[in-house]
Amino acid sequence: MKFTAAAKLFILFGDPVGHSLSPAMQNAALQAAGIDGLYIPWRVKGADLPTAFESLRGMENFGGANVTLPHKEQAAALVDTLTQEAALVGAVNTVVARDGHLLGANTDGQGFLRSLHDEAAFLPHGKSAVILGAGGAARAIAVSLAEAGAEEIVIVNRTIERAQSLAEFVNRKIRASAIGLGLDDPRISAKVRDCALVVNTTSVGLTPSDPPPINPTLLRPGALVYDLIYRPQETALLREAKKRSCRVLGGLGMLLYQGALAFELWTGQKPSEEVMRQALVAAIANLSEVC
Image (cartoon, rainbow, N blue to C red; front, side, top):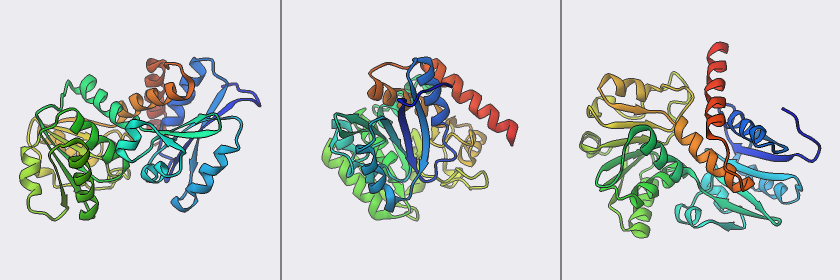
């Protein structure tokens, strides 16, 4: 990869960021498009995120940024303006430089819906879904499912107040049917057994030894189980879901599609999704060889 002193710098903010495949994907896209630029990961604690964002304002070669766990909601308060989608969701996963100002966008919801459609031929309209987690990614997914006509959205979170707050937000903003439950709520069993879609938006599964975030015996055969985690490719949740004849999807497709949308916002160009996909596959293969 070649770049000059005038190269645009693209940054991934998160904690952790070492697991992310976004650098491989975005650098491949930049190179294929002939853009003089470099995409790098930057691990930053939440307390230091305001300082990190402020530094972007004086960076003449700042090209754009992604924001991942656990900073997406905090980032929404650190930019100058928000796109309609980011404002609705209350979380930012993409930052765009616009004439010295920072624009916050959110491409997670669109990327997620496209992954559902293209990879699983799944349309949310009229179907019920259970979302595990209530952070920034969960907000984007809950909003996208509600806007796509999901019949009921059940948000399950360790802190019940956050689950209820997100459910109330979805009900108020989109007039959808959403409820928030704590992990020990007895209603979870029936909700999971009856739903068509289960989505894990938590970080449980990033470590190979992590157990499934919910009791896998509750999963109904034929349901679609989607884990936003893409490394490892098969989490304990997906492994157990397969045993129970569920359809399964990891987060690689969402990563690709939300990343392609972010690239277009930064550069004004549509990236080569095939190049991005190949870079992701190669990165995963290299990781497997190392392991």
